[in-house]
Image 1 (tube, rainbow, N blue to C red):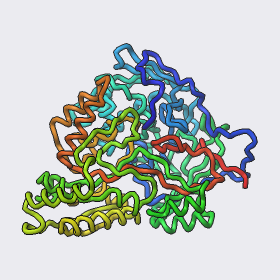
Image 2 (spheres, rainbow, N blue to C red):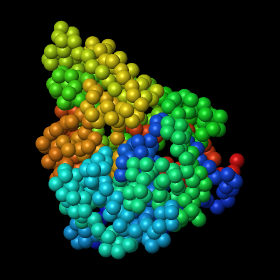
Image 3 (cartoon, helix red, strand yellow):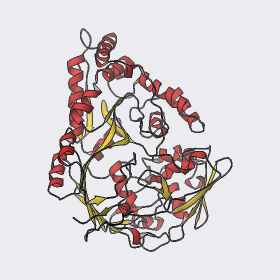
Image 4 (cartoon, rainbow, N blue to C red):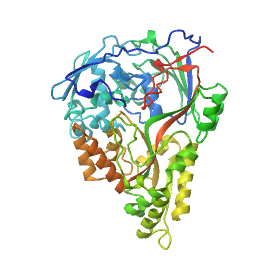
Length: 538
């Protein structure tokens, strides 16, 4: 996920020279006697299984429970995880990772290259039906696409283990950002013996075997989870936090109340409250650019017939005043979006699109014109639909404001529907919606992590947008030395076809107790590891 690293020059041999350290504690700092970190999350996690998890909050937990080939430091650079270094062949089609020999699972079993082979084969196996199988295909691993399609066996995947500390990966085409992709949970190792013994129940605390800095010691669904130090972790002696507790608190205002009371160390800031909280708590209120986008999905298959008319989609997109949403509703440093890819993405140049160069008054006038031409609105057929979002005060406020804009400017009637997170994911994935909230946080720091979502075969193309030219451009970009012109054309096609409506690019808005130190504020992916954090004395 993010930031340019040592592999930018596509060297034949690459070693990670940055030391693999845990919490970096400055001289003179006095640590608290109790090393705990407690934080609030909005909803229950999608899974603790690295090959199944599909949400940001769940991935935060999985990064603590499991460790992949590489981790990220506080700036988003790659640092050793289970892998110490890697070599790439002259044609950049073969990657050979050298694994450390002191990595262990929580039951004391050594972590070997075969654990990665098993996990990667498992991720592409149609039997598991991993929601992130498509990600393994994007990694261009040899035979990945055919296995996912059911045409080859998982054992044909281009990954092998010549010995316990050597992992060899064969690619079907050179991929400049390949090693950036192995910080993602889907690529983490998995304990075959535990999965075979316990099946789908292997992620329960009493059954789980993991290789990260922490183990799962308690989990009460929709209430709380607890992870404690893994005494078998290879760098346990440099880990400082003993326990990390997550509370599921669906109400952001309640989360803030509990933060004020000292019951949680971190919580999201409710929409619109960042300016006041930053003034009241200047050292504990944060608004940090983040590699995520927020958008509205049209259902282009089974949604309203009106959505098949590009003029309707364009009209609805133009009528949304993004400045109002970010400056008056959210007020947390978010950025109005007219492109799908955030400007904070490494190496990405935001393209010029017509809508971005217009004033809001001009957009509103054009929106009315387009809707009328399509036969809807004033003097035409009534346009109405349902907008689906997952339960959250901030999502609700954005939905209310956007639908009021459509009503006042275009006469469009929108019914709002909210669902809890897991149900929402199922509903949206099954195409049982008219329009739905969408958001994506980059899996690595390169524009393809966003634009690949809009290709025909993407597992998260919930609009079911299909454009042959977009597919062609994104396939070409994977091996291009300069993909930016290709990305520009894709963004311009998306702006013209408008299968999704970009609304804003994220800022991380959190209240973080000043007793918790080591947060990666400079990592635009906001990938954090509890092993890098520590609590200071009052």
